Image 1: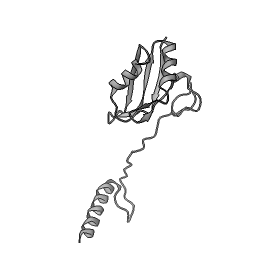
Image 2 (image 1 turned 45 degrees about the horizontal axis):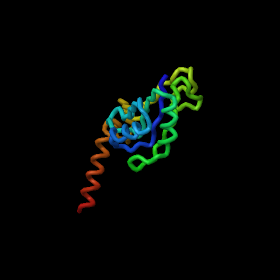
Image 3 (image 1 turned 60 degrees about the vertical axis):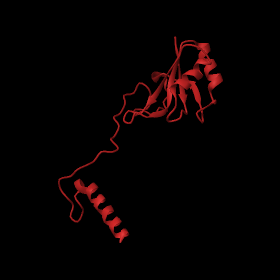
Image 4 (image 1 turned 90 degrees about the vertical axis):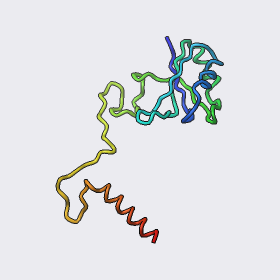
Length: 142
């Protein structure tokens, strides 16, 4: 059975070949995959390594945890499986076995058809802010 290791504190941009060479210096059968941001595709600073042998996994942790890589001290530890997480889980829903609660959209824009008296129409709030900035910049230039 393979062992999954969490590899953290990676630089935002790094050479995957260098990291693979670092793992290869410890032992054979180590496969690494970096986690990337879904929207930008940039690295998120961590990833997971699958190691075929238990002894090699222990050697990777012992030899590479805290070792400097591209200016950062690596953090390597055994990864918990999703079903083994503790109740202090950051996922919505809390403890394992409980259904996850849908997350609220943070960047949700709420529109109203009725406009309060004296208030700008919320549908044009972004455009109004741009115009105010433009006007302020013109006043500052004069």
